[in-house]
Image (cartoon, rainbow, N blue to C red; front, side, top):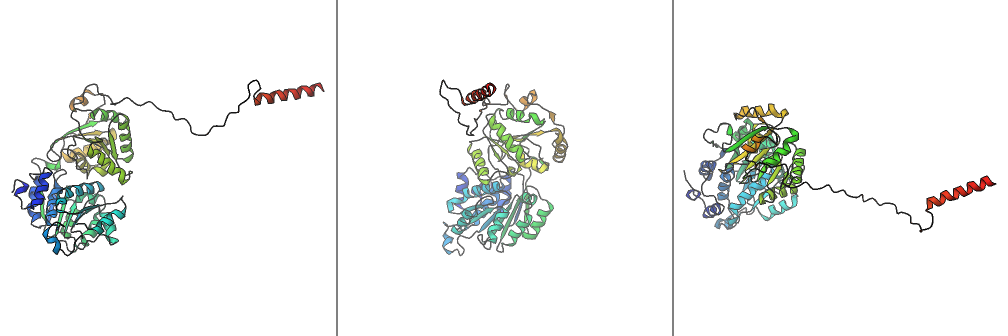
Length: 450
């Protein structure tokens, strides 16, 4: 097996792009998949999150694309029509995969396009008409564009399904089957997934040609538990969670952090509370428009914010190096969500810390997760924001409080409703109301005298 990318039979442009972005040695999944994929074989890649699956399929498809700067381009019959289709379950993953592929492909003039819902059709249609070699998209938008005749699938020769188990969970499997059926010239199919449910295996048998199943697993890493993550589980009380969270965010060497919530309402409220306490926080959840979600993710990547509060919509698709902490503000639904959440840290060989808050009504759910993953953390320690062991195990400086800035004073806004103009009266004269009283007394006096 080759030890570096340079030892693989890759184009010089691809090796140059890999080195330019700091990729010299392949990870395990890449080292095992690349020889087969570069030989045009169908591949099923099964590996836990954060192991470099994007490059495992990205490099082979880039190598096989006929690009505008290639000598073969002048003889290529179907210039500008998609040659590669990458299907992903979420918008966030769509933009991430597109970015990763574009970094390696742009020096050959390869045009990569992300298509997903929540955005206007027109820019995506215009880009397709201008010519695209690689399309990365979510199933619903891909099918919509295909039905409109804007996305031509007939020349797609290589198709990738990324995070196939998530597409199954989200109900996209029928759409995926339609996409596969509409690519008659497909010569290579690659499927990547963290788990392999029965429906995914059935899909592979139906649409793939003698695929080679590759599964990576770290030594003694049964249950796909991310062994490099330091995991803490704390029994927390609902009214004290925000105080605990604020203190954890002041831990020594705490870097970019993702806080996961189950509900959109809790997600937004938690982010608002953190901002009010002085933290640079952003949020991603389903009630936000696509523009707001992309802005929040962009701020987080650029370092304008260092806390991202998200629902599980972001558990897959956020591939950012350097995330030091993942905090489960609300207990995950099951062991798969737990692994997907904490997998946002300890990526690409790094270490990370995961903290899970378990409320009283979540104990049964947590015990089930613990049992399946064999974590040995069935009885979370009861913890408060003032508990000494919270400060000790998470390296929180003594004296840290729930705020890093003083609370802003409440500003009372005056009503903007127009008030009635006050009547002015000349000094020395009685006010109108007093004049009326005096006139009434005069009339009464005259009546009595008569």
